[in-house]
Amino acid sequence: MRSKISPTTLPKDAVPKTLKKLRELKGWSQGDLCRATGNEIGRKYISRLELGYISDPRLSTLMKFARAFGMSCGELCDFVIRNGKK
Image 1 (cartoon, helix red, strand yellow):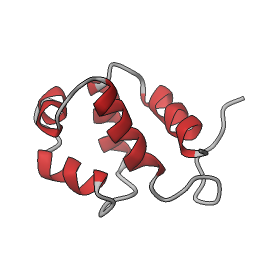
Image 2: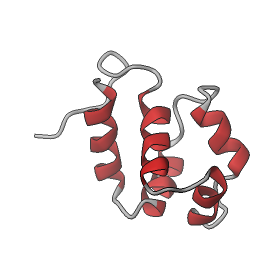
Image 3: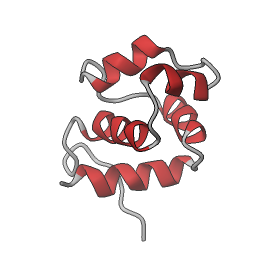
Image 4: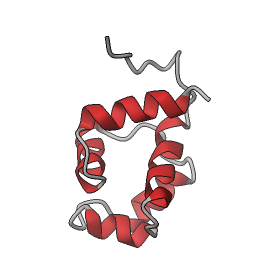
């Protein structure tokens, strides 16, 4: 059974930290990630997200990130859950 993302179960910075971790695992700069999304997500947005100014991106944005990382949105959410509990 899949875990559900809930504000009470994950730290506020779980999504931003996980996205940054995935980006770094790929060896990508923020600009590289921007290009991997087809420039649909700007480098400035990625920077603001990683710095914690944005902590709850929209589902449509998460779907774009997931595609850029070569995974489904469900896989990305599972990765956030696994890494956000630390």
